[in-house]
Image 1 (cartoon, helix red, strand yellow):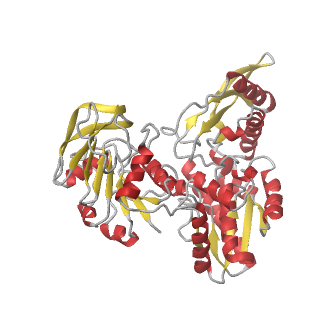
Image 2: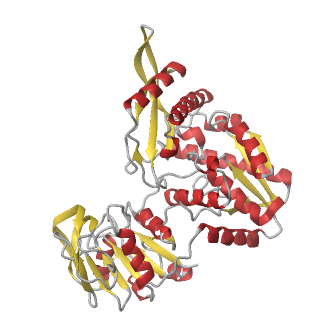
Image 3: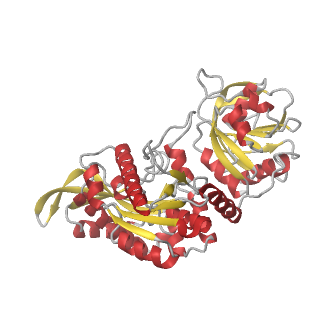
Length: 510
């Protein structure tokens, strides 16, 4: 399969580049900016994209890639910092700009034979840079400028090297997807071969070859990711798949019983239900660190899976619904991007894992998983459900997780979702949930002073969970939710609304 690699220099838009390339029908994957030539050659990408980044290429300690990547004989596109790096490494010169440029700009196109084929002059682009290319590398020509940036795009078609100072991957660049399409199809000569149908066939074949005649255990959470994983693996191994659905005491109200029945009845899956709430709460007693919570939960899940595998006998493989954002946030490789949080099914796994992992979705973003679910014939009620964190309510109870505190946030969450559905908002939102804060607040109820818990509610809109905007809910909706939570959830006397985007915040609080 044709692959495009994005080398990550720390841009907040790197994941968006990968998504846009996939939307154009080409498989893409993110690699660290300092990936070795040997690693790149082993993976055999058909083209490279160098991402943006917050540093200056001439600074001491700035992230650099091996200059040898320009001798691999494959096309390279540099975006923002990537353009400056290309110029810096190939004999050009990059200097601080007299005037920084952030926001909208208009392109003055000088050459339409390459990146800008079919792009109109004056097209809107999005700039975010404080440096400029003062001298072009040998063999390059200037193909676009803006009012404030003399070098907005450079190209060397003979070498297959191209660079843009703006960000074509963001929605603010009106014809950005078309520019990326010109790079992929007209210049790099790639074909749009990436689709969910081709993905299913490839993954089923891969799992079948890997597993052979062995048995597979699959951990289910009641969410889309793990269910799609189970259906893909089931296509590959049939009756040699056993699914385990664990009640860790941190699920939504009635979720365990309802989903256990649905999974067995609607999908013909062999599902074992395990009630382990007491074990999880005992392990989490006194723990307040979100990273420790995730690791404890991940390790406890594995212990339960190992116990169930021993009952079945001969189980060598564990399938789980890891998706690409989990990998990106949990296990960044060497380079400028930071670990955001250890997802329980990635960074939370024990080193002495006795299973060989099967993670058929770890290349997919969330919206791609939903497309895959539709391709597998899954009903919309399953596909369109809001994401729910693997560690469950443990990461929505800030501070120590106890049965009482988990129940409190569970009740608040139920009320919020009831009102979201009544208002017709459920399918407009990416997520809606309640969070129990580790503080108390003074209030007055029934002419009496109270000193009780605070609940935060969060409603966000997103396409893939990698970035998100807070939802501008109507005041009357927020008033209804607040009134119900304070009146119906004993121990809560204050409700606050989270109006933070991602970034700088994450969607979940922990």
